[in-house]
Length: 215
Image (cartoon, rainbow, N blue to C red; front, top):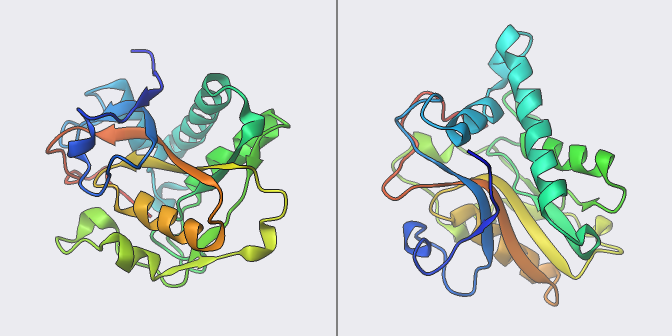
């Protein structure tokens, strides 16, 4: 399989509950839950990206670094006119002081920045408190509840570009994307906002297997 940048359209948008026609989102592959890492190239990539801190120092943890580099290459080699965009990572469910904090999304963007001088990345939004991973609870938070735990760093907005790309690894319901979009709009009302994801979940696919380690 070759990863291909694909737009969420009228056929795929209903799979992601919180997205509507105003949301401009793209993804590289499709993730299928409950099928394991052998099911597809995308599944394997997501499994490797989501290896938690408990794997640090183990032989298999090196695959996480490889996955980060792979996604960074996808972004810089696929998206044209990188100078037009500022990339903003969706923060992990754990805050920075939490031992389980996993900065993999920002790490991907740092790798992009290291390989391309035109790449602009701002860690604009962090969480005040750690939250449970979305897949670990049946009472999943709404975009409004997620946004209430966000804090926006206004000190690093100077020179920000006209289009902000909210970046995350997996698109499921779209709640985190909408929370990010709403929060950015409060502080930067004049920028365009789009979403970019390593993968989207297929219809009726849920985070139920042991690989779903959302830190």
